[in-house]
Length: 126
Image 1 (cartoon, rainbow, N blue to C red):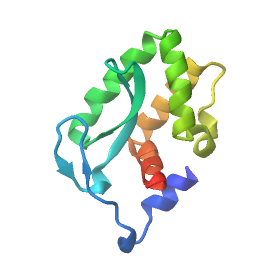
Image 2 (cartoon, helix red, strand yellow; image 1 turned 180 degrees about the vertical axis):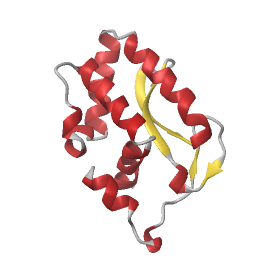
Image 3 (cartoon, rainbow, N blue to C red; image 1 turned 135 degrees about the horizontal axis):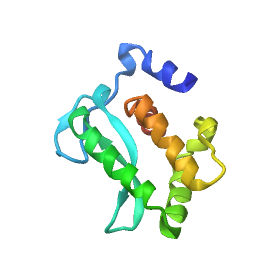
Image 4 (cartoon, one colour; image 1 turned 135 degrees about the vertical axis):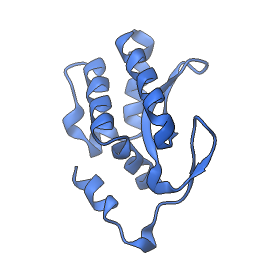
């Protein structure tokens, strides 16, 4: 996780901007940001969801459930998520034999980093 380590060691002048939690709708310091792929049932698509530490576990469980109930829509939309966020460019080790396996690997990365790995992608894009 070279990118993650470099950005986490950023100097104070490069401090993270505050963010709005996608679940509780509270502004939080940027250092608390957790990010993960999340299935929006209304849109029928995976979006990047930004959570505070208090809301992160519930969103992670929802995403895990969607990945366990995989179908053609999830497959198509997770491909789009990977492309939009350049996930494989920054984290090539998550590539699996199938898109569902890749999704599981991304969630493992998100879990192991406590949501910080994909939060870094949001910061890179800012």
